[in-house]
Image (cartoon, rainbow, N blue to C red; front, side, top):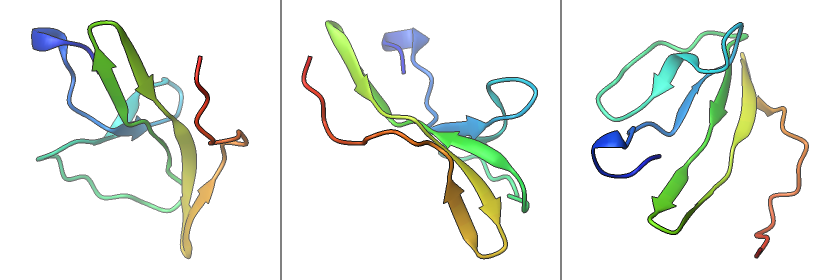
Length: 78
C-alpha cells in the first residue's frame, strides 16, 4: 500500500486491541501463529490514480482458519 518511499510491504496483520498489530504478514518476517489469533489479509495494489484491494479477517483454530468477513467477494466496478 502506498506509493514510492511511502509504500509499506505487507499483505496482512493481526487484529486485536489495536487495528494493526502483530503478527505482520510480510516477506522476511517469520512469526509463529497460535490458535485463537485473529488476523486480516489485505492484498492491495495502489496506482497513481487509485487503488484496488480486498480485506478479509480470519481466526486460526486447530483445524485451520475460519473466515469472519461476511461480504460478497465479487469484483465491483465503480
